[in-house]
Image 1 (cartoon, one colour):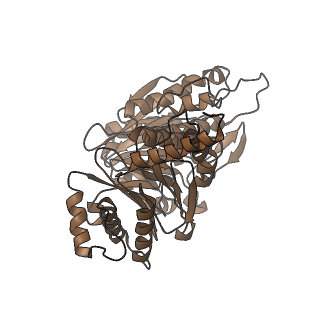
Image 2 (cartoon, each protein chain N blue to C red):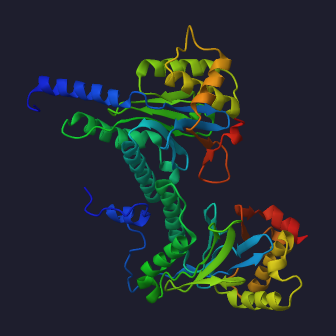
Image 3 (spheres, rainbow over the protein chains, first blue to last red):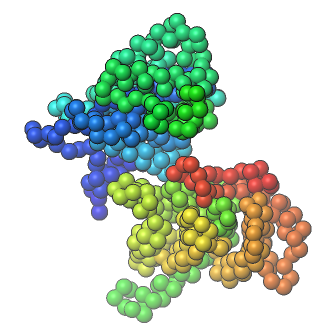
Length: 256
Length: 246
């Protein structure tokens, strides 16, 4: 028998009852070189929210791979973009994926948007010891549908490493290449024609790909976009109907 | 009483009779494996009959709502814990039932100072092709039967259940689309509810159609669909009557 009774619909408390709580490891002083670095961003466009990320993972000055998917579909109405240490970030994504589906199936209703936003904040807070010691820092972006209004409205949130949550009105970026991206997004939102929020799908995807091209020029830890080598980004959309992925073929088509 | 084997046997037999009596008149549930997925159907009056369990798994049944809920929660807890600690691909109906649900049902049924579960259940797992679909019939005493593909019925009485299942097998012999399958299941549901025979003397098709339409008034027809191919991990979606052309 388990001594802890799980909270109804709360997957983390179910795991705790089985002594399987994630993200609870302690840190040694001799931590290995971390795999990290990224440019991820999200902005509102005419049909919803576009979330994109480069595909490079680095450890120091070593490129580990150029095939990482940093924009993750958590469920049919939720996206997560990860920046920071992938080991921790992917585990957070897995916890969220299982938690949201567990709640929906067991309680016969989807988790509300505020609860989803807080669920990620809770994971970041639980990761505080790793963050404070400089190992396992994660600074994610989050987008989900607000289904309390009709039609459902896509919303973007961002976090600090300690778990504070903020809503983004227009755009947001995270990762080592985000400084460059943020400046361009801000300029385009104030002076651009069209503004990102007015762009159609084709313009929005092309804009996102060009942002990543620029970020990779200034940040060696950001993988670029290069049609010549078939190197593209991970791009996902959050529309009132749910999550959609933009394939490499579609990206190539939009860039022509 | 427990130290006397004969009295224990009598007590268990009495419980079996008690459970069957409690389940009598319960609204049957159905599952059928089709080329594009598995269709589950039940007709409820205020309580749900068909549920999503996990990415490729669903459940239907009849019985006491609290007992159905306990089994449903246990299955969902076990499936999600398994998926998180191993992988979603490792969640299997066989293991879920053989090592989880069935022993618990049997224990509750045979420990005569515990309340037995008042349930008759159908559990399904979608495969990569219809021949790999798993339909599982789980009884209140923990007994279960596996079946690959085909059609399964969960009713309160064994003989009508088998008769309905045989009739549906015959009706689904050959290719049947989802809309026709749903309509056939509703005809079988009406026959079971009204104690109509499935062999000789079975009502005509038009009688059956008129019958289920009349009897479902004021009740909720619940349908679940496990899609064989989907871009998403979660294959289950609830269906409305309009989605199956009814």
